[in-house]
Length: 98
Image 1 (cartoon, helix red, strand yellow):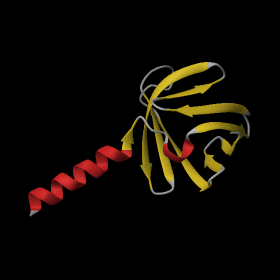
Image 2 (image 1 turned 90 degrees about the vertical axis):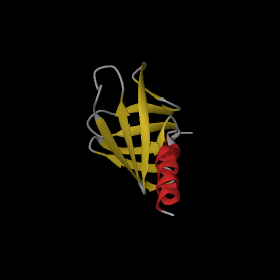
Image 3 (image 1 turned 135 degrees about the vertical axis):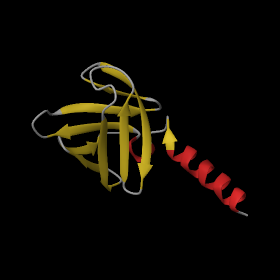
Image 4 (image 1 turned 120 degrees about the vertical axis):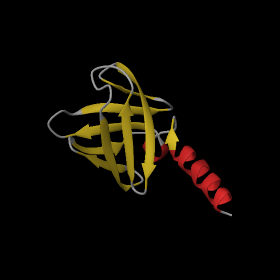
């Protein structure tokens, strides 16, 4: 029984992380000190014309974006979903463009 439970937990955890941006999928406009458009795509983000490889992990209303390369390599940014079209992080508020 414990083996089955551990197997199911590992499947759920594997499904939560990886390439899919989950609720962040699409294009967003960041307002705040550094306004810019940000795109969240499978396995990558794009901002200011720079594409970086990332992994995503969804934890409840939070999406953790961990950078795999570039200047942010090894850094994780937490985006908290306010609603389907609004998210917040340390840099400001993002609103879905499309």
